[in-house]
Length: 193
Image (tube, rainbow, N blue to C red):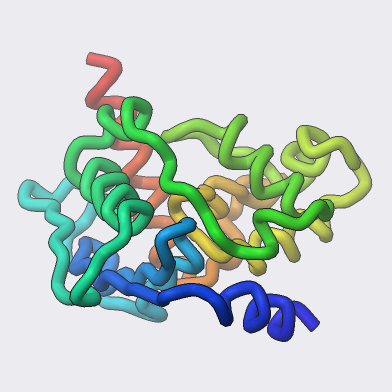
């Protein structure tokens, strides 16, 4: 059913894409003039540099002939995230155009709560996020919401960890989640000085 909703919602869109080369491998961004549809991380990518790497970069490798403003904002956001993380608070989050983020549901509430309340360099457990989203008994549903997240990293599902402190699963592979958490921790420590 979700796939039918997805297809119907985007059938009227003029689809565009951007592919970024990042420390996590390729990041594919799709969207239209209304907003970002999805972000796909390269599954089991070989990480180019560790979080402490001196030359972290994020460059456009490929793009549609025309690139809509939401995709340009998304590219700017990713470039700041990897190269100048202190800037992401000053940049607008690109608009999203995906039914999961537009139609009322617990998943939507969880994803927007995560984006709003769990900041760069922080982590939250599935149970804590369920509490923040208004249903303390829905930790498993939070896990489902994380798996459904169409815009990872921007909506930071990598910041949701197990209550025992283990990182847990991640769409692009647990090594990507660990890299993202390490990157944010290191950058937050640098900013504190």
